[in-house]
Structures are given as C-alpha cells and as structure tokens.
Figure 1 (cartoon, rainbow, N blue to C red):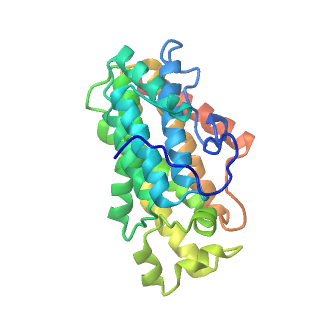
Figure 2 (cartoon, rainbow, N blue to C red):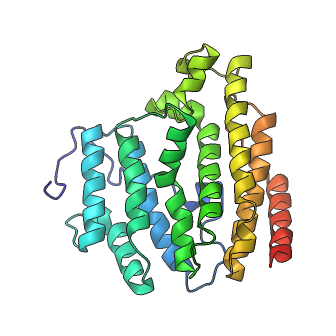
Length: 290
C-alpha cells in the first residue's frame, strides 16, 4: 500500500482526528509516581495509541480510510518517514523507542486491535474478548514493564490487570459504543443465551436480563483482578510498583461501582472521594508489597 494520501470524501475540520487526551482517561497516565525522566517516553507511547484509537473511533471515516490511516501510522513508526503532519506521534514514539531501547512490538500489537475496531468486528465469546484485550490493552502494561527494566515475572499479572481495565471501560461505554459506532465488546453469545437482542444497548436503562449480562461480565472481570492482585509484589521498581497498586485499587473500586450503578443511564465513574480512597488504599498496599 502506498503512503496514505487519500482526500476525505466530506469536509473535515483542520484537525479531525485528535479527540481526547490523558485527562479523559479512567486511570493515571505518566503520573508523578513514575520517574521524571521516563514520563515523556510514556507520554509518547500514549499519544501514539491515542491517535490510533481516535482514528479507529472516528464515525466520519469509512473503514477503508481508517485502515489506510492506521497503515500509514505503523509505516511511519517503523520507517521513520512520514509525509503528513498528523503522523508526528509515530515519529516521536520511534525517537523515544530508539532512546530507551524498548521494542516497537507493543505499539504495533495495539494497532492490530484498532484495525479490528476499524472494520467493526465484534466479540462473540469471553475468550474472543480476552483475545481482543491481548492486543488492545495488554501491550500497554508490557511496554511499561520493559521501559522500567522489569523482567518477565510480572507479565501475566500485568496482562490480567490490563484486560480487566479494558473490560471495565467497555462496560462504561457499552451504550455509546453501540449507538454511536455500532460496536459491542460484550460477548454476543451472552445476549443469545439471555434471549435478548444486542439492540437493547440503545435503551436508557437496564432490564433484569441485560443487568445479568453486565453482572456476568463483572464477575469475569473480578477474576481477572484476582489474578492481577500479586502484580505490585512482582515489580522491582518502586514508582511503577506504586502506580500498579494504585491502578489495581481504582479498578477494583470501579468494578464495585458498576455493580451498584446502571451504566445505561449514565457513564459510571468514580467520584473524587471514591477515587481518593482508592488511591490511598493502593499506595498503602504498595508499601506492604515492597
């Protein structure tokens, strides 16, 4: 495929792709718990993935156009050459990876998930959802571990935490994902077993059968969080260990919140007080794990 140079089919804003930043995320991005000299590298990785995610989520782009954008993004990362300004995050990440010696495989794996998003692929089973998380979320944890010089011991627990975070985000956004993008990450087989249509995701509140599906997803997510619980004790780097403990605590609190609130009525998030308590609990646990 030649370098992406296709004119959009409808008028676009000057910067049609960038839509979100780290302030909109559920969990800390390059927090002060991480070493100051590594935080710019984490941000380079984040901005690359944020751009790719925004491309895949752009409702105004056709699937073929999204795939072309993502292909150009990966090519810029691997070649160090780009003809368009929007590809700068790829060049910045390439420079960061060269400086730190971290592999580009983590970023390229996430692009596999975004290509799947671009064509509207859905998850038919829990194992299918975990396979999606293997590429959409788990490489983020693996990148952070490699950046901080960690070995492979923490990898499986990190994968479990990242997958849990991804599923929690899907549950938060289930209604918008379906109504705005026609996407459903919750296993379709669960809807079939419950005898309801995935179209129920347009409703303004859950009924008992849809609530049971959300609860089933949260039960599976809690098992992932149980597998992730040893993670802080497996990380040698003090700052990364504290950050992992905080994120684990926040994820546990969000799971509990989703059990008590209806994500179809409004996006379920942690309030300032609940988040502060979760952070404090996570920090306390990190010291006991050291």
